[in-house]
Image 1 (cartoon, rainbow, N blue to C red):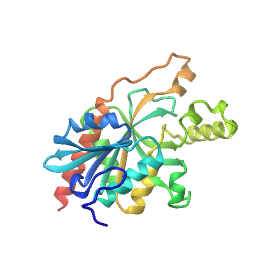
Image 2 (cartoon, helix red, strand yellow):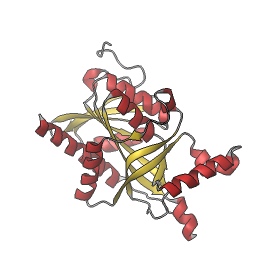
Image 3 (cartoon, rainbow, N blue to C red):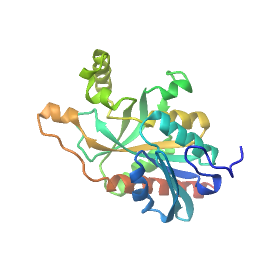
Length: 257
């Protein structure tokens, strides 16, 4: 592959991208993360993919949005890997499954339930979607360093937002509800839409990926306690922790050289 040519979807070439990449879903979150880098500049914006590149401790780091769901996240990840990136942190949001979790909590996904279709085109469903231990440790240490409440555990990665939030409107409502209760019984923490795709592809392509998520609302907690909706209205601690986690893994890599 000629990496001087731009990737079709993300519209970046090899010289545009650092080896370390932060992956928010929302294109609007890219510039907010980029403010936490040094000398960051916008590289490209196409469809759901916006990319900025700057530096952390003198090391080139990029931020690329993945859009919503496994298919678009998979495209972004595959094209970034083709351009030489090898270390990724998903910086996303989620909803609660564990009713004890407060909105605003940070979830560091050790693994993900593969309730999506993208990864079945890569490898059979029995293959687990797990995060890179070094990155998960770096993110956990970053949260502790910044005094932010965080939890390590399993998340659900789904394809349908409304399948979760309006299951009674779906012909297979009984199946959706049964699985949701199973995730709860199994101790899953939260639900989102991209982590399992990123973890599976990273494993297959032999690169590193971790995922840190902001719990923005916990309907399970609201239903249990019969309380009004409560939303987390700030994501600064999520972005700060993700960037600090990336900084820590860069330092570890430097020391290992």
